[in-house]
Image (cartoon, rainbow, N blue to C red; front, side, top):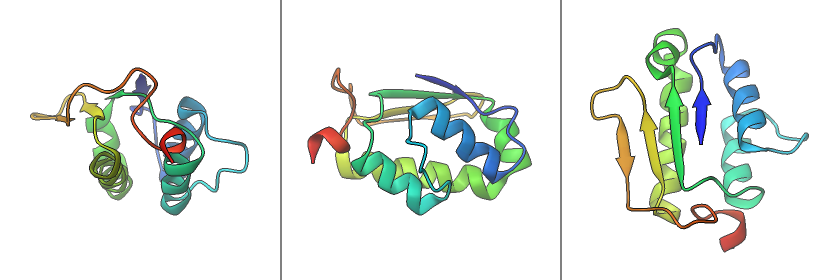
Length: 110
């Protein structure tokens, strides 16, 4: 799945993009605790995520970019087999292997 974060200007905007692109429910709280809850119990992340505009996100909202990256690394460590690419970043892929066809852990695996 391709997610363009290049136009994001603040953390609220980042959460709005994540909610829309990842299919989070309307009651999504748009904070990092809510993100963790959503990906571990409400939706199944795709086996592969690719973020475009990542360097722009890091420049505009560095704390939010770091928080998202940390959340995805925790998710990957807990559920495995997720591949995340951060376009424009040297060494910007974090892989744990090929993801299963239905997604990579989370709600369906609980």
